[in-house]
Length: 305
Image (cartoon, rainbow, N blue to C red):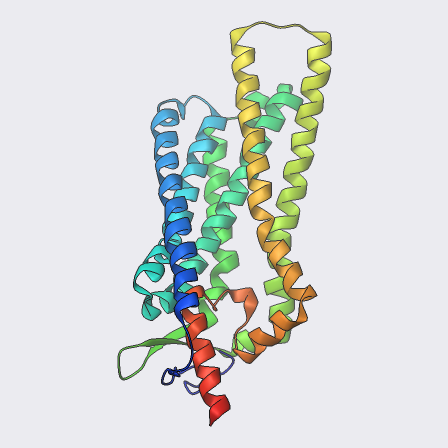
């Protein structure tokens, strides 16, 4: 996928001696069973959250942020919905379309979820640590405005990724991606795809969220040592804050997989050499499970020519 011509990614005939069953089985187990089950559970959970919290979202800025976060997570799950389809039908066309477009939409939704998590924690941070500013900053209107700006920022930041590849069609109707010149710009790849992307999607959000979480926990500890309050409203606020911190813990764990994956890709040189041999940029996630067998078939055939 490192040329703008169709010759470097047009699939060729399948090598009859190559056993593709492990690839198909892996795709079915991970993509269809595990991925599909996770998507279904996530969608059901988000629908329940919206049903339960939706009635109170206009009364609390934190609940409104939770509802918006559930909507963003739903969009993320829907963007990953091609995974079970790839696993069931081993559809190359679905895999190529998902790699070029659907997974980029998922990155936008993931970034929006990240920003909404920051907004959620900011609301709790102001309410707990800066209570004198809560009336001005902890309002549903402010949450909606910041969330709208966050949505536009996420779309604008990841918009260049939609111009890295385009989809072409072979004579037999099979899709194949074609890379654009921007994909081969070394400065673009290093500055945007690596430095800026990880700063915006992981480093800055995680540091900010952890800082606010620690400040909230310290505030709770000092408050519990001085005042033994039994007011029900205060207990409700504490429970809401604890729920927000639980969301943060889950968020940090889930978001840490991608940087760990990237570090392992740097550490294990054989992986990088294999990816280069397959003419695929690992940062863009274009080598999905459904295509790896075909990449190997393509390489194996050329080795015998």
